[in-house]
Length: 235
Ligand SMILES: Nc1ncnc2c1ncn2[C@@H]1O[C@H](COP(=O)(O)OP(=O)(O)O)[C@@H](O)[C@H]1O
Ligand SMILES: Nc1ccn([C@H]2C[C@H](O)[C@@H](COP(=O)(O)OP(=O)(O)O)O2)c(=O)n1
Image: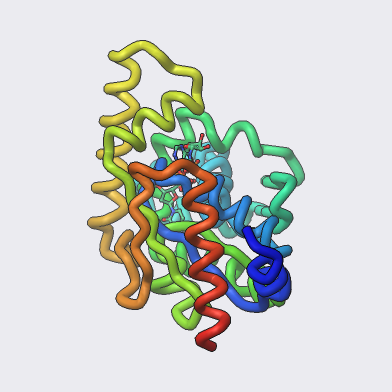
């Protein structure tokens, strides 16, 4: 990294969106990019996961969309925007670990497909973004729906096998049967998130698609920072 490049990115003002399916590196890359840009960071997936905790704790039928919506509306969901600390609370309880567990991961897609839930969380996301001069936001619909006028939109992809292996490594799973289960879960969630009627997962027309299959995490971070420099230069 040359001095000039760092200086240009250090003065970054604007919004970077990172969308894509699970295991493409959105969270890790978005955190690193935000830290390098001196920007705020928003993990919208954590918001849908926290909403899912509220739904699970309310014990409502997941197919009853009104009850799901009420459970989310009555919960106090707090998500932090610092790149170096994860803060996720539901009704004052720290759920940062729980939202990554199997129960929430299994349930988050149907909860996040409910349009009224999305409207509530998208309003919250836009309010949080409005508080920052510079912000990196990651999710599924950030470039398409939440921030359609973002400075830079990146859509991250990676081969399904690579994504499953990364998730397995992250969870410390080595058993091939368990890795196959992780791969099947990723496929199921991709399919659900891409085919829902409201805000399906897809690249924005003006997004830059970055395939991270053959790139390590740092290489993806550098690529996104390069794109951010170019986007600011072109603005
Ligand atoms: N380019 C990459 N190559 C290999 N592993 C990566 C890469 N990017 C991220 N990872 C790792 O893969 C795992 C999943 O990444 P994560 O950022 O949680 O993805 P997502 O938010 O898209 O689900 C993490 O352990 C992360 O460190
Ligand atoms: N902007 C977003 C972010 C996440 N979601 C939904 C769809 C995803 O399957 C879940 C969980 O998202 P999250 O980014 O935490 O998932 P991964 O870490 O990529 O596995 O939330 C969404 O619908 N819209």
